[in-house]
Length: 144
Image (cartoon, rainbow, N blue to C red; front, side):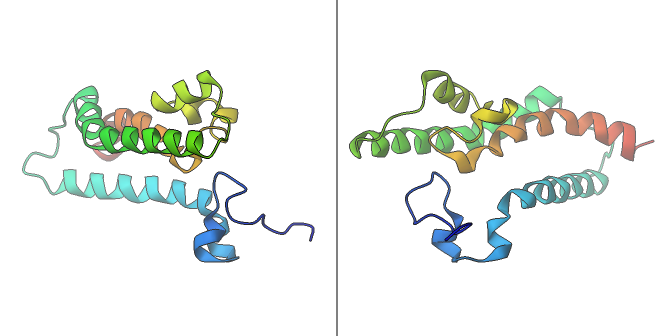
């Protein structure tokens, strides 16, 4: 039928496989901006309740600390996804698509976000600029 979702396994991202043909879950990409707004609110609230509200970690230090927690599991997931793709005899993405995904920049180039092994992880590449810009936004919008 026209507009019907493909069967599970025929696309890289198949949220309907988990949640059925549910309208709310088919718009998952719209929840990412909500996540960033909520995350910004939580970080701002935590800073405003700190003993020294103007004390912020340098942006690169903060990003490095956050990436150190996230990237090992992310990289492991990419390695497993690569192994599964190869074991199924499916073609791997082009080298530059995989390189962009391993470097966490796949969503910085719009067409690369839909082609890699783990399409659902595109939003993780949005975290790095968010981590870098939080301090600037906090100082110039909240502490003014």
